[in-house]
Structure formats: structure tokens, C-alpha cells
Length: 150
Image (cartoon, rainbow, N blue to C red; front, side, top):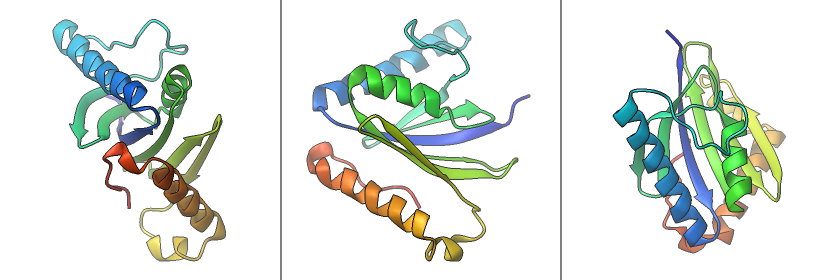
């Protein structure tokens, strides 16, 4: 049995495009429950980005992936719908923890040690990442989001 990676994603951009993505995730979950098989839309390249146990928490979408975060899937979805995203992920068995940002065609991911939050407070890369994340949130104040990441 695969280890599962817990993921959360917030899409930012045109409200219609964000709503379409939320509907897409809802449809993925519906198809998987109906067929009891993994499902991804036909336009997805590289079928390893499966998502399951999808739930919605405000504007955030929570789901499980297999083994690692499936950032390649999120990038494909963001590019197709011309939006940006903020993502958080953790897979406790293998110690994979981190966050990712996708903005202006660029993916930035920061992996961290979940047990060493204090050193992250002084890490220049981590601080720059947090500043960029906040700038993204500030660009889309009407997205109805509340920051839920650590």
C-alpha cells in the first residue's frame, strides 16, 4: 500500500477560472467514487498525479496523493486555467514536508524539516518564500481565502 501525502492547494486568479478548477476537483472525486478507480481528465500528461479523498475547506482544496506531492499535476491545471497557486504538503512516513508557489509560469517549492520550525524563522530562503507567498495573497484579496499553512 502506498504512503499517502496530504496536500492543500489554493488557486488564485480569475474567479471564473478558480471556480472551474474547484468544479474539476469535485468532478474528479465524483468519478472516483462512481467507478472506484483513479480518474484524471484526459488533458493531464503523466498519469501519476492522482488525487483522492478530496474535500473543500473554504477556498482551499484538500486531498491525498500517493507518496509525494503531485506538483506537476497542479502546474498543468494552473497553466490550463491561467491561474496561480499556493500549496502545502506533508508525507509523514518519509518526512516530506513543504510548500510550493506557482506564479508567472514559475514553480517554487521549499522542503523543510517539520521538527525544526525555529531554524526556518531565520532561513533567508524560507523568509523570501513567505514574502512571495504573502505578495500572491495580497494580489488576490477578494479570493475569499484565509491562510491555513503553517
